[in-house]
Amino acid sequence: MRSNFAARRTPWLTVLVLSIALSLTLVGCRKDAAPSDHPSGSVSPGSTEASPAGSAAPDSGSPSPSAHEVDTNPDSLAVLVNKQYALPDGYNPPDLVYPDVPFLFKEKIEKRMMRKDAAAALEKLFAGAKEDGIYLAGVSAYRSHATQTALFNNYVKKDGEEKAKTYSAVPGHSEHETGLSIDVSGSDGKFAAEPGFAGTPEAEWLSEHAADYGFIIRYPEGKDAITGYTYEPWHIRYVGEAIAKEIAAAGSTLEEYYGAVPVSGQ
Image (cartoon, rainbow, N blue to C red):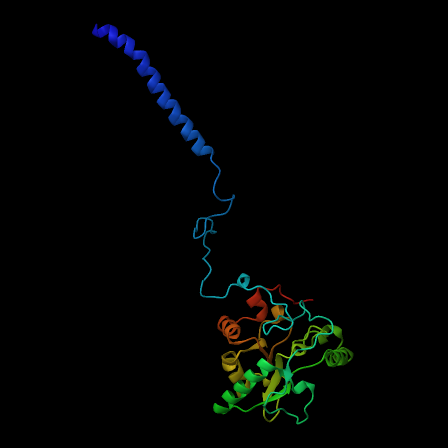
């Protein structure tokens, strides 16, 4: 009896074992064939598996060029205007006023004007400089499109178009037309808008403190290939304190802040 029962039981055991083995095999095949959760070459957030050998992860404390969308709104205090990005045809700043600061001239003409927020910040900057024994004066602030056109054409006649473009903007591409920029000098007017201004106490103070008041040195030394212009320690641009301090801390430019394409050669 025992032997007959065992003989009848053996086929059932064999079938059961084979069924289990087949099921495990099919599950393994489905797992191996399952598509990845991420496209080829990509990894999940926080993973470092795809980082090239020897490369370091971006410093989260430094500004990321891709973190800021380029601001092309002409009325924005942070608008990017350069050789690549122009102001709209016929643009006029909406809120020009006369900042209460000394200029190298007495007349209340357009180049003495700035937009309201920039003018208020400029007054604070001049006051802060005076507290530190630095006496500044305005040289040239806002320029209308017509003024910029005449100025640029005169430079072209004097030095040729190629050279003129290294230090003067094509009409419509000038920061002065925004009402947010101003050229400054010492109160004596020495080296006003000239290379000799670099290294003066006034230039050094601006380099160190302009960002505290929402201004940046718009065309820093060594950044010609990015800004498209030679070093201008006298040309400051209002962008607001947050952006100014971020740019100053990084030692960068407004183009780099926005991750904009370098404009040299254009």
